Amino acid sequence: MKITVFGATGGVGREVVRQALDAGHEVTAVVRDPARLPVPAHERLRVATILDATDPEAVLSVVSGQDAVVSALGPANNKQARTAPVTGPALSAITSAMDRAGVRRLSAVSAAPVGPLPEGAGLFTRAVVYPLLRRLLRDVYADLADMEAAMAAGGTEWTVIRPPMLRNRPRTGTYRRAIGGNVRGGRVIGRADVADALLAALTDPACTRRAVGVAT
Figure 1 (cartoon, rainbow, N blue to C red):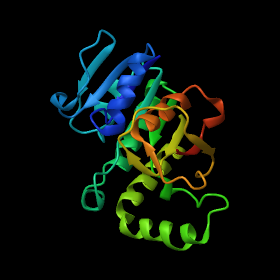
Figure 2 (cartoon, rainbow, N blue to C red; figure 1 turned 45 degrees about the vertical axis):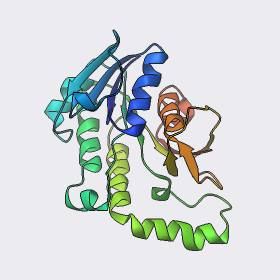
Figure 3 (tube, rainbow, N blue to C red; figure 1 turned 90 degrees about the vertical axis):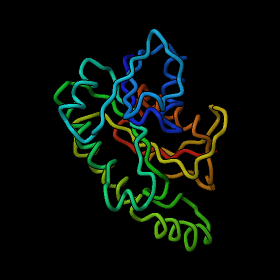
Figure 4 (tube, helix red, strand yellow; figure 1 turned 30 degrees about the vertical axis):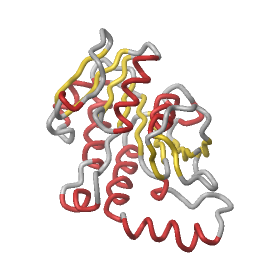
């Protein structure tokens, strides 16, 4: 496949680029600063610099002719999400550009607390963990919720991947999934496995227009 990756310099994004190349795909890595992409030059890798991912015309130039798009974009912190939200506006621009270009498949990373409580969650999770996270990072999750709404409103065959706390761990491929919900007891997952889930969703019809919880 020909895949465009937004947020390619982030912890999840760089893993998406590496794994997609390893799988034989052609990758367009969208970055603000090419120097921050720690992936060696490759004959199937194109690096595209876009300073404003909320600009539909700029985005159109990197999604046209592609088979799929992966977004690893996300707000860095509450302050950024509150004062200059990017993820929601960016995915609105991306889905609009994809519709114009006729590109159908899209996967994007969100976060577990944006979704529902895991089925069968215990009292501590229901009464303490999720309410506390949603309060502490309310602006981050609001931006991600806007992102999910923008994806659902577009015409793409989208998938949202909702991980819990991220860790820098090697890819295992043995994480758990919950289609339409969150993983019970899921507290952490490696960024490399989130990247695996984002890529796997592109060819899994069961994930189309669904949110998927993932966790170790």
